[in-house]
Image 1 (cartoon, helix red, strand yellow):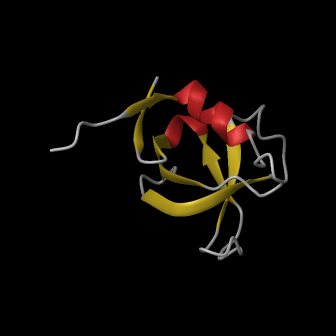
Image 2 (cartoon, rainbow, N blue to C red):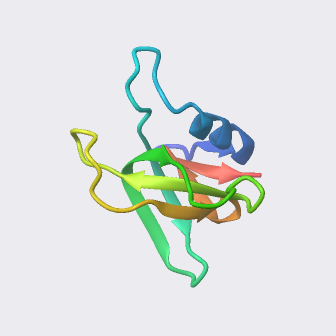
Length: 94
């Protein structure tokens, strides 16, 4: 049985802030989070996206779902940083 891996939330947020790889491609990640209504959402392939408001002051980040060709498959979803429970297959630890 595989051991559960953990990542600290501040390190996951630092990875989120890296928007591009050195060769100019968008950084892709997976994320699992809990919405305000309690629904758990998993996005297997996503990229960082901007929000219509100041996300840092509101502790929010924007996530845009994508497909294997890095084409958007939905709309920008605001994610509260306290609701993130998994980042790239690793459980979030404060």
